[in-house]
Length: 141
Image 1 (tube, rainbow, N blue to C red):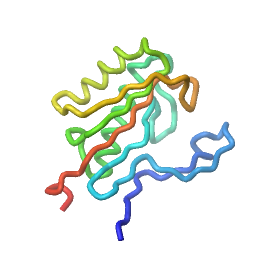
Image 2: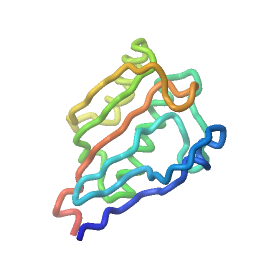
Image 3: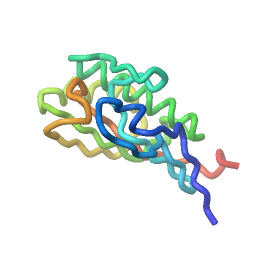
Image 4: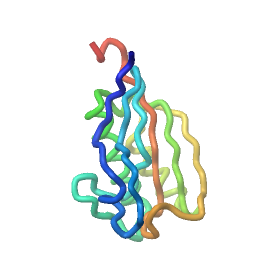
């Protein structure tokens, strides 16, 4: 029987108090040697404060810092990224967001999907990035 590791569990009633929600979620799940990271935004994971309001590049920077931290907590690293999905609320944010993501993934070569969406969970969020990575077998022992 496989037991999945849950990284930073939380409930949406605490993280979205202005919304009538009650969902048990977590920031990342380790299933086998794969790490699935929840969509990250311009939010400090320790304080839940939004950062970079009005600045898509600053929000992408925070999202990528969150992804790095969560991968490390899960037992992986940025160089083991496999896939990124990048959500933008405006196509004009593509260049600043992708330049920021590119700094974090230099030499890694993950696959990536980019989408323009009508909105994210909070109106101040301009981009969201989710990630899939692996934990190489030699590192998981």
